[in-house]
Image (tube, rainbow, N blue to C red; front, top):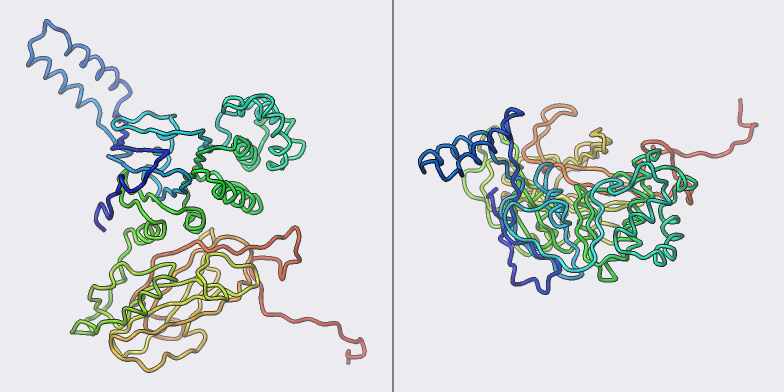
Length: 464
């Protein structure tokens, strides 16, 4: 993957409420504790007017060697339009949190300029600004007043804040006694009460429980519909896709992509991904051109499409894309527990050699929940021709507990019973989310997953 996929077009996004122009953030890293003092000493000494220039330059060189610069961000530029929802994605260490702190103003850039207009509410860290010795009640008034609300405005919003936080009598206890989930509940509730023009959130919602996450997501949708500008950092591509119109994709402190959300997610999911190597070259000639209309139609539905469709693959088949669909064949990343989720896997064949298509699901603890496909279902592929496409559909009854899941599709050949050799596979994708309201609706099962089962009351006369 190249270091820059797309350069942002700053002139095309107007008017903007946030402008980030060639921003870099560098930190000095020292090997020994006394190095900062020596560095400063050499720099001060080099400025003495009585010293010859060559000695001053030598002292500056010594100072430079006493530490090295680490750039958390390098030459980042983009703008955010009023009312836009912008996702910021990237692996750990890519500079996402640093960027948000620069925008909020808790950090200053080393180079570049950041401008913003409008009331900003930021949820960067759990309980940021809370006094641990104060009660929740006292922290509500303290935090809201620091954010610009008058006492009258806080009084009017207090009941709504307490209701949204839903921490019961703990509102009158010191926040040092709160769990992390309670902290984020109260912090989020206070931020929502400000009715911000710009809302900035850094992964904080991942700490709350399932039902609180649902409530927060609904609140974010309401704010977005009212025209609130949203900056949202998350590793959950499903919620980024749902909430954001545009996305910024960072890698190692550099801006890789700024543009439509689905394209940014595609670049993120394919980061560092290479198709699995195959054992021998099966097809000598380039495959025939695929049906471009079908490929384009599938890409409109797909959750993931291969980035290397035009490359020659030395194997019998490859996966071109994977789509998650609801019962109406519309793209989705959510399914109600016990309902149907359709999976479409588009495969191009480079040989008439039979292959098997598999689908694997893992939970948040990296445990394989299930693995199934054409082999386990004993489904045979139709007659194959080189260069042709096949579309494999799985109808999955989501009898797994509510939560988030990742998935992978693969295509390969069976080598022996329940064993095979992959020819191609996707990266781990997701998450998709299984929903259920345990507080209101009777669950179809309890536990990690459901199994096919039937039950009825029988007459005792049936006992022989």
